[in-house]
Length: 149
Image 1 (tube, one colour):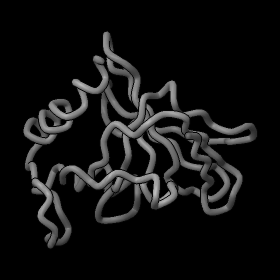
Image 2 (tube, rainbow, N blue to C red):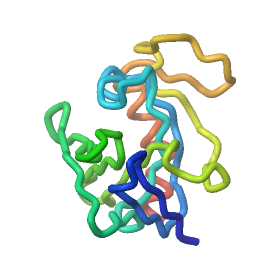
Image 3 (cartoon, rainbow, N blue to C red):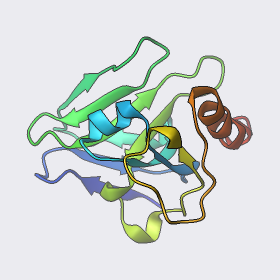
Image 4 (spheres, one colour):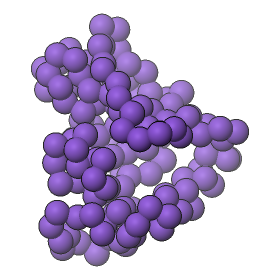
């Protein structure tokens, strides 16, 4: 199944051909700054399954030293759009904001990360991970088995 989506202004598009690997909600201060929102609700895919449509023009930034996520926003409207990360010896991954995707294509969120940086308390029953190491370990514990198959 292929999913196609666009940013608010329609100038940047993404075509996703693979299954989602993971969905999480991140409360880290970098995601808050990048998304200009209290959280980032993102879906993780293999990078090879995510293709930018012709004419897509993104502006990338890294908000910390490598290994870091290359965070892309649409140059036309500034909406957070697609983020890419290189994982040496494993697989490159892509993060796509859940708000860009059709609701029927979304898996349920698996966890909340960097919960100690939250702006407001969450009322759902998702597992909460606080701090850098605990949050990174929680993601990798869920993601690695899917990337290595």
